[in-house]
Length: 459
Ligand SMILES: Nc1ncnc2c1ncn2[C@@H]1O[C@H](COP(=O)(O)OP(=O)(O)OP(=O)(O)O)[C@@H](O)[C@H]1O
Ligand SMILES: [Mg+2]
Image (cartoon, rainbow, N blue to C red; front, side):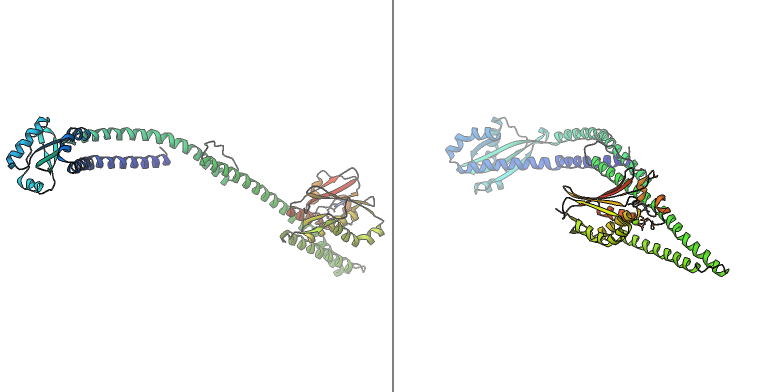
């Protein structure tokens, strides 16, 4: 038997044992006393009733009372001698089929009754295995005896005891069988749960399949939910860890290039090779380094910054940002086409961070467009505002366009143009959009690239 089974067995057995002990005590000690008490109560009731009746009423009523209460009532004149009274009472009782081996009312009791009192006496009949309980009262000139035979309960009690013992034995056997079945039914699913929990602790996110229709099933459901969530969290963490590794490798790479260039040009100056441009190159490289560090700091700050949402008109925000780039676009001869079915579209978001997003997307479009055209679209949907920005690109030779969101990712085509920045812009955009819970993405067409996002419309 398993641990739970043992516990169940012991506790149920103790409960049964206690119940039997109490029942034994009750039958052996309290049952006879209770029986006598009840008899006395009944006789008292009868004597009280008799006392209230007139003599005639009483005499007429005797046989009815006897039948009703299953008792015997006899009466004799009260003013005879004690001996006479005793003999007459015996004779009357024997006429009613009550033969007593022991019966005698003593003088003191007689005197007490004559004075209006009541005397109760229990006569043990020994060999007859019964007692006779008699209550004496005086009624006018009569002494009335109200009596009943009480069988000795010892034998019955012994029999009940024996019977109880059998029941006790049988109950214990029944308990063993019941506990065995019960503990099997309870422990099997518990064992399964404990196995699943062990697996989860070893990062093996399994699920329990338990159909017991009780609290254990509820527990299994909770554990399954927990397993799912832990699994997802674990996967996220692993992914983040992986990203961090790539990120660190990229930072190192990005920093190494300008540092080694600065070093090479410094050595050149030292060796007297400077053609007058070396210092400028070194300054440019250190500028690159500090720019990169600034961008990194900005990037990590955005990751930590809390999002503070407000409601604002996203179309007018976009126009105000676009103003900054008008001169640059004019000089580069870039045309922008903005489609918005309304001039006011209100969204709920962090305004400063949305500004960063638009800055990034606009500068990218200006920097990388190959057809000198940018198409922007705002569309009000039922619960969201959709934003699209599209520009021309050279044939894209990229398998996984989603990589564009990773920090330091720069397309080969733009790298050669020497216009691309650090490659953190879209990583920042992604971070902000994810923290807002906005859907976003990138699509490529044959000679175009489109970035889109669905912002939460303020209703
Ligand atoms: N609108 C676009 N058209 C074509 N290529 C783009 C566009 N936007 C981004 N890219 C490509 O994706 C790369 C990553 O863009 P991202 O904005 O993250 O970095 P970046 O512009 O190079 O540098 P940063 O924004 O940090 O100054 C770019 O270098 C470019 O190759
Ligand atoms: Mg950019």
